[in-house]
Amino acid sequence: MVTATNNNKPCQDLKIVDLNKYNVYPSYRVGQKEAIESILSTYEKIRSGEINSKIVELPSPTGSGKTIINRAAGKALLELYPDEIKKVVYTTPLKALVYQIEEDEQLGIPVVLGKSNYDCLLLEGLDASDCPFRSASLASRKPKICNRCPYTRAKYAFRDADLAACTLDFFIYNRAATDVLIIDESASLEDKLLNHFGIALPENIDLENLTDSIHEWMISLEEESENYTEMLESMNLSSTSNTNLLNDIRYLTTKLTKIERQVAKCGRILQVISSNDKAYFIDKDRNLKLVRGEYPFNSMASRVKLVIMSSGTPTTSLICRNYSRVEAVHPIPKKNRLIYYEPIGKMSRSNIDNTVPNMARRILEIHKEYPRQTIVHCHSYGIAQKLKDNMRHPKVLQQTPGHREDALRQFMRSKECIFLSVNYAEGINLKGENFQRNIIAKVPYPSLGDEWVIKRNETDKAELNIDKWYRLTTAVAIQQAAGRTTRDPDDFSKTYILDSNFGFFYSQNKNLLEPWFRDAIVWRK
Image (cartoon, rainbow, N blue to C red; front, top):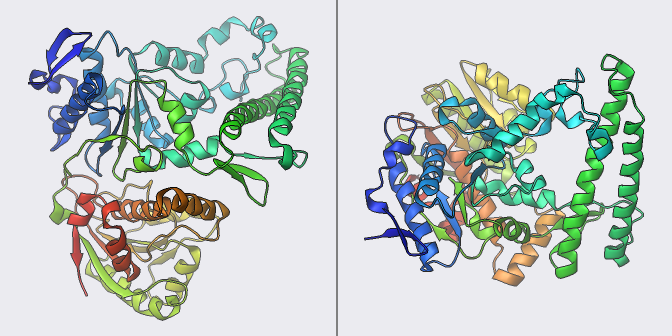
């Protein structure tokens, strides 16, 4: 019998805790309660020393209801361990998910978004990111209306709540304090962290004397910031109807925000380059980038007692070498989400022209089986164009550069359409009877022409003896694409993988694919 304790003080038996009281809905879906129980049990093992990592990976497939699992786990942890867990924060690299939580009042989770989401009450047409009251001198001049600032109120509500949500940008920039950190859709966390630690170096930075040169740049940025602040301090900020004044304020505050973020990035970068000169590289365009996200993740995780990494396609192993995994049951019946591998031909550069005509023909056949809205994941605009050139069908919609959102809107409104899409393997919800055909035209390998990809592969091979990031990123993209069209237990669709290169990829990287994905594959020849 597992009993939760705190400094040997008895707590409730985890096996008799009523998890239903943490659910905002009448009942849990298949696998949800088991996932919550596993998280609580794992945390108790962490506390007792049986597990020596505070990172927990929660693979939660499409339809599993990650938000309900995460909320219930957070509420349970707060109640079971009141002396040591006083704050739980939910965040995610995908801002849209935070917006969804804010809109769902039933969840009862206070949310703080980025400043640009809140209108300024004093300066009409501006938002909280344009707030001019930044220095101590300016803050003393704030009018009373600023006491009702919606951003400040959201920030205070976030601070005072025991369970709250925020964007990942807010969490990082504000160094938000928490005992438990829940990161939803964590598969894209490393990309976000790498972006926070990357910066374009100006021409006056001496690459041979990088540390001192960045220090000097920081000093010049701070001096520039002081000049802009002095300009704000000289303004009559009560003239709220003066259009020119509002434009000047927006210009100055935008400059200040950019400088503040550059200074913060410089500080973070200096920490890295002073400790490990192999942790970063500078590309031909003078962009300084970290090679891996392990350092910033460890820095973020060091401040909390428990981190829950939640994703249908987890990539925790890329940024953390020691973690526990909680298994979750896929709530959607396998028969509703089958993946048919039909090797039409190789889509590699040397074979693509021979393969495309046959693939175009097969796509039309698949669409004819259920002529409504079929999505084809093309991986590149070039492939989309080649397929379009070989498809004689009046309902083919080709996504072109610069028209991403327009193409998606047109596809969603159509009664019948074959959508040749690019980079829509994630971020769209094609739920319902109109979306029952999902096609992966090419194995989505990352570009080997990208400098960072080359450097990451070199680093992984040197440290791990395998190009792990490259392979896992490809596996995640395939699985994400496969999950676009079967979204809940009552939904149904068929996914087809037509690139013959998938067979070889599977044989070499089967262990990188989630069990729910492997189990759903139907092998055809």
